[in-house]
Image 1 (tube, rainbow, N blue to C red):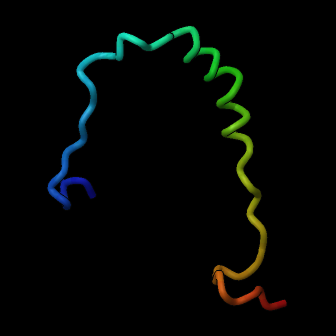
Image 2: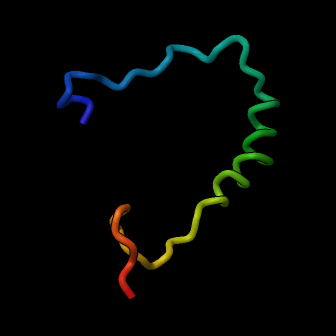
Length: 55
């Protein structure tokens, strides 16, 4: 999709000097599992936002 629009994938050449590796690891262990696990469960119903589900 990027190429179709004339864009390219870009990545930084190096990590930011301000990056705190300890804080990143702590976030990955404590916060990310909570964020990742908090997805809503799929419910049966209508895919239309304007029409209620028919039963």
